[in-house]
Image (tube, rainbow, N blue to C red):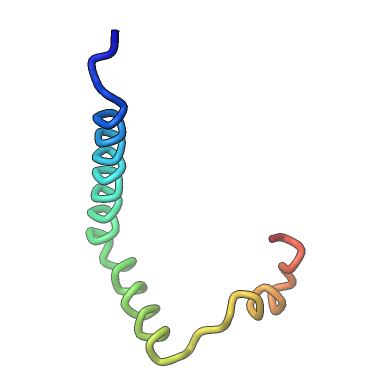
Amino acid sequence: MTLLTSEEKELLMRAANLMDELLETLEVIQNKELVKDLRVALREVKEGKTKPLDELMRELSLEEEI
């Protein structure tokens, strides 16, 4: 005998995943150094100071890793 339908089980799984994501977000925003680093990184992206992943992989000699 099942107490929940498959749709209810799916909804509960989605709610649990959302709660995990919210807890992770809270952990991040409580870490002032990490928030600062994220702001710097986002500013650098806006300023075009990024590289395509394949270029970075070549520079780091990681082409065979992925």
